[in-house]
Image (cartoon, rainbow, N blue to C red):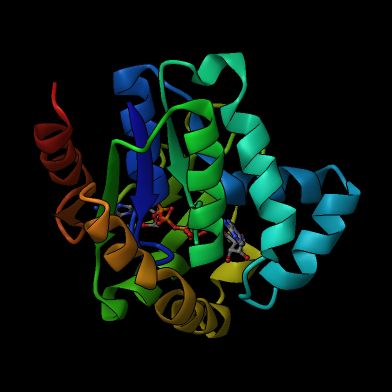
Amino acid sequence: MKIIMLGAPGAGKGTQAKMLADKYAIPHISTGDIFRANIKNGTELGKKAKEYMDQGLLVPDELTCDLVVDRVKQEDCKNGYILDGFPRTIPQAECLDAALTEMGEKIDFAVNVEVPDENIVNRMSGRRACVACGATYHIVHIPTKVEGICDRCGKELILRDDDKPETVTKRLNVYHEQTQPLIEYYTKKGVLVEVDGTKDMNDVFNAIVEILGK
Ligand code: AP5
């Protein structure tokens, strides 16, 4: 099963993508995580991506498309994958479609996790992320057992640089301008499904599984 997660920054795409990847035993591919890993490792890609991410802007398509197309061609993707945070622009979607057509494949579902803007800033300021293993928490909704420490790997949690309120507002504007048009794009392709992302994360997960199939 090939799935795309759509939704505003902080809608819960990453949270759901990780749960779905476990359930369907397919890789979770997050462009945000790939860029953050490159930043952490000080690569050229990481240095370029950081300039845009810190401002709440999208990393240019030319740095993003080939990276994802190469990734979905890998052996572990042959039974499907979940794309989290990609595509984010119409040109990215067209680039993915062109590559999939060449491979004789197509996307099965584009899952739009809907959360109004007013809920987002609160979610982002409460998010804590583990840079070591990629796990995410929320200080109120999804707390860790020990404050500030990752349940999964025991490393320290951080507030992401781009989760500061002023950057979140910018990211929301960028989302409405550049990413929201993908909802119509995938509706026209007949693969869009929508879920209410304001519910408890397990309810959101169950609603998605209900649509995708057990
Ligand atoms: P990326 O890492 O993809 O960030 P994003 O899309 O802005 O999404 P987030 O990770 O912020 O949120 P999410 O929807 O995954 O929510 P989460 O599950 O964490 O991208 C970062 C940056 O990289 C971009 O701004 C851009 O610069 C660049 N980039 C990445 N991909 C790119 C691309 N394709 N092209 C160009 N640039 C790209 O949940 C949020 C919080 O809410 C957490 O604390 C979570 O615990 C909590 N939560 C989740 N679900 C619930 C729930 N149901 N109820 C209550 N709390 C919940």
